[in-house]
Image 1 (spheres, helix red, strand yellow):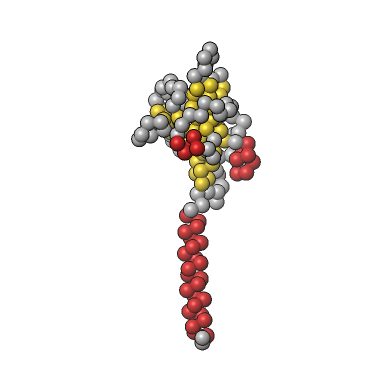
Image 2 (image 1 turned 180 degrees about the vertical axis):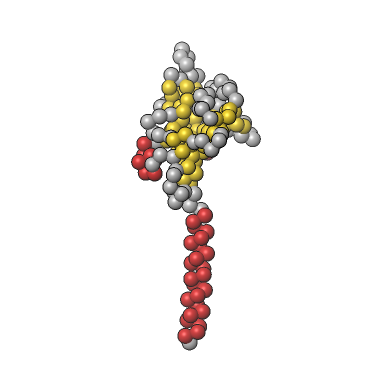
Length: 174
C-alpha cells in the first residue's frame, strides 16, 4: 500500500472514531435515583447523599408525581418553578408531597391512594454543564395497614416490581 492509501485509510478510521465519539456523548445523559421518605405518613422527595457527594447540589425546576398504575400514565400533581427561579436540592432536605414552593405554579395535590404505584420525577440540573444528569426518578406506593395509616413502600429500580409497576407489599419502607 502506498503512502496515499495509508493516509486515506487513516483518515477514514479517524472519521469513524469521531462519529462514534459524538454518538456516545449524546447517549451519556442519565437519570439518577431520587429518594422518597415518609414524614408523618406523607411522601417527601429528595436526592441521595451518595448522589450529592458524587455531583453536588442540583437546582430543581419542576417536580411531577404520576400514577403509573393506569395506562397511559397520568400526572396527578406537580409544580413548575416560574420566573427562572430554581430550588437547590439537598440530601438533607426534602419536598413534601403537596407543598408548593414559593415562585411555583401548581394545583392542590389530591390524596394518594393505597395500592397505586406512583412515579416522582425531579427535574433538576447541576450548575456544572458538563454533568449529564438531567433528572431524578423514583417509584413508590402506599400499603394499607390493619390499624394504622398506610405505609410508604419505595420500589427499588433494580426490581421486577419497578419494571411491572406493581406495589410490593413486603418491601421495606423508608
